[in-house]
Amino acid sequence: MCGIIGYIGDTNVLPILINGLHRLEYRGYDSAGVALLNENRLYLQRAAGKITALEQKLPADAPLSTIGIGHTRWATHGVPNEANAHPHCDCHQRLAVVHNGIIENHGVLRQELIDKGHIFQSQTDTEVLSHLFEEYLASGMPLSEAVRQGLLRVQGTFGLAVIDEETPDYLMVARNGSPLIIGHGQGACFVASDTAALVGLTDKVTFLDDGELAILSRNGVAVKTIDNRSVDTRVEIIDQNLKRIEKAGYPHYMLKEIMEQPQTVEDTMRGRLLEEECTVKLGGIGNDIDSLLYARRIILTGCGTSWHAALIGEYLFEELVGIPVEVEYASEFRYRNPIISEDSVVIAVSQSGETADTLAAVREARRKRCKVYGICNVVGSSIARETDAGVYLHAGAEIGVASTKAFTSQVTVLALITLLLGRMRSISSARGGELLRELQQIPQKIERILQQHEQIRALAEAYQDARNILYLGRGYQFPVALEGALKMKEIAYIHAEGYPAAEIKHGPLALIDKDMPVIVIATHDSIYDKILNNIQEVRARNGRVIAIATEGDQEIKKYAEHVIYIPDVLEPFAPLLTIIPLQLLAYDMAILRNCDVDQPRNLAKSVTVE
Ligand code: M6R
Image 1: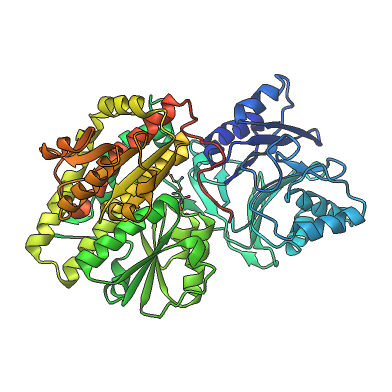
Image 2 (image 1 turned 30 degrees about the horizontal axis):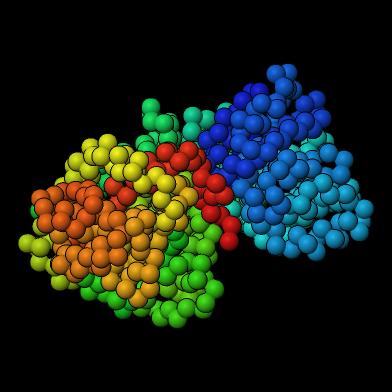
């Protein structure tokens, strides 16, 4: 949420900033800006709208500079306009600040600074930072100390970068609750809010921890804590693959990421299946398996799509491992003082590994001395680093705001954990082998569904003007119904609800009429007959049924107006297939309705604020 990029070195900074901002644009895209130092003068340019709007405002003769910062915003405080765009300056436009996070005591600080004569230009919480730092600079402190002292007064979350025209030989960065990564170059340093912006620039990075600040200069990096204790600079090497963050010929990241799923699910399983023993090897939890194995209760937590994957985890763990599971929204878990005994285990599911609510839930669980595991995609992310152990998705960067390939990889990881624990508890080698062989088949089964894209597009054409859509599923397919509805809301802006199919007679049936498309996931499984009954209930009220059914099921055609077939699959892994047509349908509807698929209105990729 909001993207930050900064650079100091010997190369012209502006192209580095603009390129970095494009890579970070999925984090927020309502306004953008850059600040540079040229001959010890601060140069600032900002624009409402996307990065292209900022580029259009930048003059061809924009000043050359070798130090600068940039920002792409997702608004929290203050409407998305130019005045509220970052960077924000002090009264004399001497320094510039970019910030991701929320300054919770901004009201008090703002009033205090106004009383001292500071003049504010924006409605943002961020602007208090620039005036606060100005105040300390005015007392004669160097920038590094002014920033440190200022941050001691601040409550809230921040990832921030500061430049000052009287300090052209370094830039300051600091982190508390919003990710910041420092990149080490030759005679140069970078800072970014995620590694996507550093691809092609450097693979040597330092993940700043909460409560740390750093001085970035052409000679290197010095890290210390905000309360002034020294910290060794930890340098890590990250995997960099430009292809993974490019569209590779697809019109949108979302479509690329949907189409990549045979490969990404394969990558999630790569090297983890032990065919002979009919089980699974997961290096990230190998040494910490006992807490999971003997847990009296597992709590799965996450937000949005990750929460839906967690719900599937509940069905998997309870059916095949035999451990009681609860699934809780991280945003609820963190504030409701949950009862967590020492023999409970928490598993946090998060693509980005940075979602503020999920991270706070992880911290709450750890505070209660509970063992916490993470299922994350982004390597080195906060949740990955703050959990006791975990499993990476290895799905590659997910850039589209709508989560697609991360979902199938999350479900795959939950299936792998199920197989691992299940084999250690009660699953026989014969059943284990059956499950393992099914997992191996999933990528090519996904591929077969993707080949039906034309048919799904035709369906989207037929329903593109729908104002509401109901998604129904039972058992393992109920979370898929929720996830299908979320995709439709998020990118096609159509009101959609996911429901357990049997529940509709307790209320939602009242919504059904001839204009209501109802998508029913009716695969051939243990409750197939029951879902047919639910379809009849919808048909009897003239609802228009679109069924997701199992290949070979001719019966379903009697009840449904349209049928999309998926290959036959073992029931616990069916969500890995049934979600695919729903992702494609949401994508096609969004395209037909001229929606901005990769950057839907009002949203951003990683939600690093509450
Ligand atoms: O990065 P996370 O998995 O923690 O993100 C959680 C949600 O913000 C995310 O899944 C969101 O719901 C997606 N945009 C849905 O497509």
